[in-house]
Image 1 (cartoon, rainbow, N blue to C red):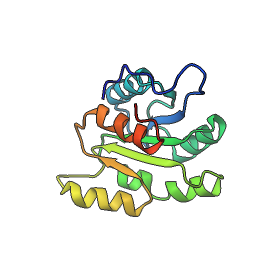
Image 2 (image 1 turned 45 degrees about the vertical axis):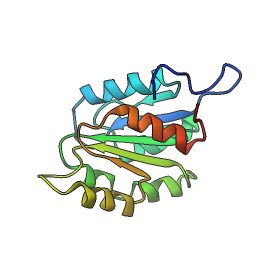
Image 3 (image 1 turned 90 degrees about the horizontal axis):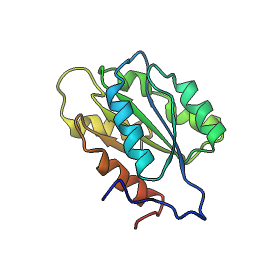
Image 4 (image 1 turned 180 degrees about the vertical axis):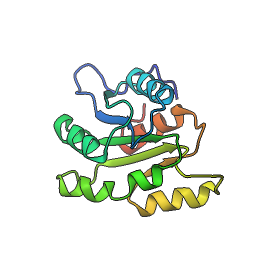
Length: 149
């Protein structure tokens, strides 16, 4: 799908998503690329930047009435940083919010099938390996929100 296609028509409010790099991770390039792609795809992106805590993701999602949280991690500690995020969302009244995670989420080379299972077991809806094309994520988001065009 083309990221230049607008998800919503001008009479429809844009879907808000919260994007950020979780934990002590300072890798900003991927975050900026994702911000650009999601914005061009027609989403209202609330970008927390780098070194964002779970609480910052949750608070931003509540404030923006976000439909999704997109967590990026490159330094390999995403599994640790993301544990409990689904529960924090539920406690804050965000039950059902879509959770997406991508990047280098674990330390060392691990089979991605197991990484994906680990994150899905933690309540994430979709999980992406390092180097994934952001257009795949856009397509999944459109599908998840019934915005296929």
